[in-house]
Image (cartoon, rainbow, N blue to C red; front, side, top):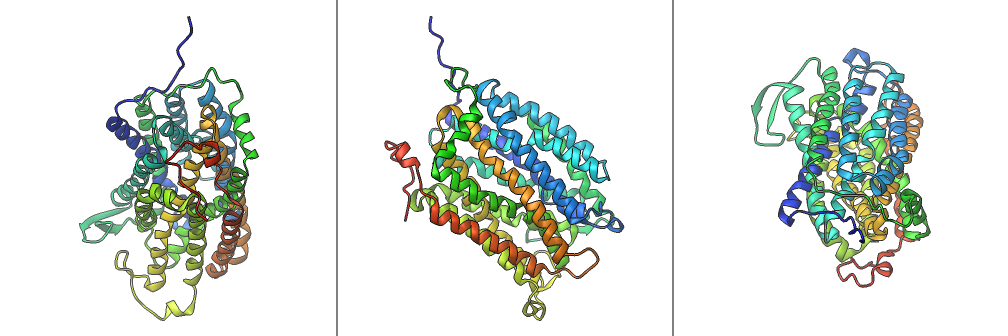
Length: 461
């Protein structure tokens, strides 16, 4: 008797959308608690309650942990999920381990414990982003149209977790106001040590998310696949020119994304932002991301992958160029306070407005890349293809960590006058190089692979 093929079992469409949306909400709420903050509390001086690590040390912690986690993702995440264990069960195990490690990290003060525990947590949590993406793709009939609407709940989760933590734990005597973040109070005197508690809360969210994963639709491995080494076959996708170009340019963009998370909190507080307002201020980018994600399917269909990806790269360039202008004397002469976050003058307002470009940065480049890779990859290695793409998010942070150390030592010396203008202009130049590579060399290959797919976005230009 022939055994029936093992296929994903999907619930009714509306219930499926709800369950996958909750999955994305929890996935990114976990990261949204600490990712915007750790560059700040790692770099802040001990007199403020920070850990007083150097730019080089912070670059190594954030870069190596991200790199090791992403480099192992094809084996830990892709290979196991594609060949041996249902995706939802693997997610549960990884989240429990990662959540416990984040909790322990919150109690550390030395560089080496931070580095080791951060690497361990990255090994566990690094594959989860790609696995949640591929689990969603496995149950969607039209990913180009459906995935952005589900992924946007991850953005909402990021915003909600950051706002709630900032309002409940970093402030007191809250009062209602008509502008975001709507509830605002006095900053706690020990706000910097309280920022470290974001790791503990993230650990609790990770474990709760692990339990929820056990209720997700069954997404079994492809046990009958002809090629047993799934991530090996996924690496063979480099034969596609578009895949190679996407990863090459993405490697540079991922390095820039890393220095954005390292230095933006310090830039904003240098311009006058309160520490308690870092999470709400940086969530401006996530609000913009919601709108761009809602339009992403239409953008891909009308403009094609190449133009949408290039728009994402150009948004990185423009944002960093704007960050560079905040040091110009022109802004210092115009004392216009931020209407939402208070004193700081026009430079702070300009930097806050530039946060909105994150919507284009993430949705057009990263989410667009996830959708493109899912269409390009063969069905039995889609998990691994996603994690191979995530390798660039790992190698990129190492480059970004090194870049932050080199640029930080030159332009942002400890105890000296920071030269944010030069720092961000160099970053903008690197982003311009990546965008030009993408715009000139990338060509959509999904049409040739799936000529019968009438809904595939046409490559414009």
